[in-house]
Amino acid sequence: AQSVAQPEDQVNVAEGNPLTVKCTYSVSGNPYLFWYVQYPNRGLQFLLKYITGDNLVKGSYGFEAEFNKSQTSFHLKKPSALVSDSALYFCAVRAPAGGKLIFGQGTELSVKP
Amino acid sequence: GAVVSQHPSWVICKSGTSVKIECRSLDFQATTMFWYRQFPKQSLMLMATSNEGSKATYEQGVEKDKFLINHASLTLSTLTVTSAHPEDSSFYICSARGGTSRGGDTQYFGPGTRLTVL
Image 1 (cartoon, each protein chain N blue to C red):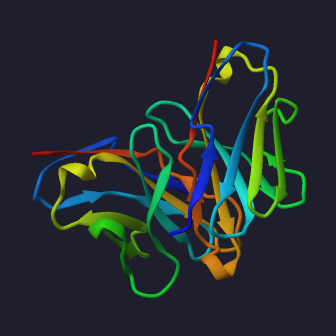
Image 2: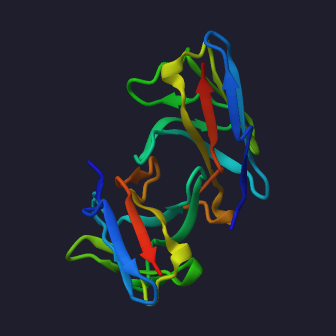
């Protein structure tokens, strides 16, 4: 069965510092991996995805994520955090054959000035 | 990226009434649409998946007679909450996935609808 884990409910970072939001997954076969961001009372915005190719994926707003097959991880990173990055971040996985997107429980990122 | 709209953004209704929420893919054809429910500070719970022209597939525990889903065209899906009760109050989010010409491996989400049942 597919599953996604985001081990941290909350991540606190000072503005200008690098940030990492962790995600590990379990899926049969090669995974399709996604990161989404949700601002209060809004839907989810797509940030980036890994389907195949380079393990380092660059996405919107300066975010990137690294696919690590041996560690079954897909951590989200940004070199320099902004206060406006404060939001709820979701990692998701889907099996390549299609079907449902499985979400992690979400990580609340708080960036303080 | 692709745009998905939802209407209304919020609705308040009396217990026992029905509420319809529309979801539209604005710049791509959505072969598959999804409806989610989200409680505060929690992850998304998939309610149902619908393919254009077919009956929706509901997740276990979701009452299909209560949450009616129609996906009549490649750009429009509707969710009708029938005989709404206060426990149906929630944030409902739709999502759409297109064909391969529009990055069909990616789901794009609407802005959500806040439903409050009095």
